Image (cartoon, rainbow, N blue to C red; front, side, top):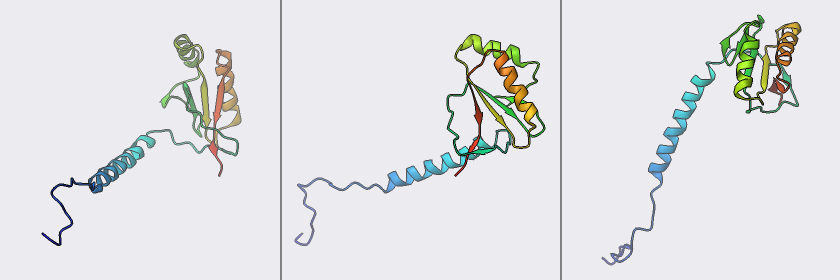
Length: 135
């Protein structure tokens, strides 16, 4: 064939990336949809904003106070009376345990201070306040 540029001696030098792109787009959509379900299982809090907020991915105990001052530990409702036993159990497993305290904007200041006081009384001296970073 005089007009053909394909020679039988040459191999296929082109790679078709269309199937790869299709698979990656499908995976991206799947991750985006499942991320929605994961984030909807959290306690709805309206966090205060702070310009100096940092990401605290090394949290061990995640405390949350909603606007009605209900206490949650790692997403499960607990009472202030249960905290000493829970903290002692976690400290036995990991002496370097840290606490992340999150409270709704409408939570009374006294409830937050009470929670921090209970945490410190039970031996956790490293804690962070969860805030939403201002843009």
